[in-house]
Length: 325
Image (cartoon, rainbow, N blue to C red; front, side):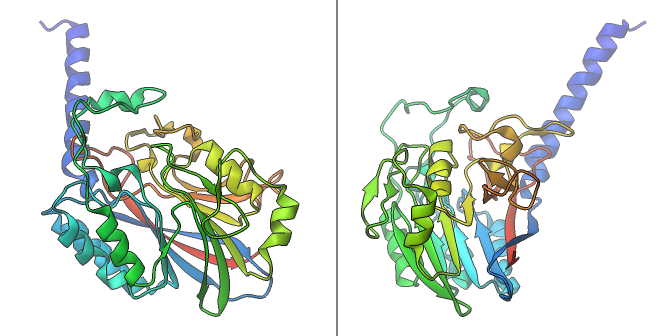
């Protein structure tokens, strides 16, 4: 007769194996389009549609992901924002350009993530459960052709927000943008208001009222970054951005139903691991959120090839419909 403890341990092991199989074979390829509405435009304006792409971590042979990303162009967004970590292999350029080609004719903006610069290296996936998962690689990393990719983006008219400010005109609207390089690699330098290439440490910010006055006559002020570290979000909030778009977290990648993400791989609180929130307080349309900026964190479409599992956290892209507040 089987001992009850042994039966319980066996059932637990079986459930764990089933969860890993689900996450590695099914959910990691079960792409989802999230749709959210953000009341952030000036009174009386028509809606503006923004497609937020992040963390594709594309490798050669991921044909289903490529086709799914291409098909998002049928949504006909007014603006595309790519928050980085586009690839995960030195030979992924052809696949990535095929995935993004239908979107390059739409006004767009981009920033880099850590995995845009270097190919991933093997590491213990359990490190992601630590307060700081960053670790020096055992050997020099393989550099990816990110400069050539940036040239392709810029040639298509996408705005490079690597520690820069810029401006686009979209659907009759004037949109100002401010962005940073990847904070996970400590490459972020928050751009000063004096010009597109003037930078300052993220911790040195201006008064929000002064920042609003310096914006001039724009319809929307967007902040764009890859890794939503608090220092970057605080700087963007003090810069009076209306909405911040970020990625990096993979929505936690592994979540517990009823509990949520286990980690965010940065100092962002777990309850903001993905989706639409406010920063630093509640959502601007909630009680106590009048002084917050909108924050959208995209859970992203991929994983590291060395940790190809997602659980209770489907890979995603987001269509944000911006409407009048």
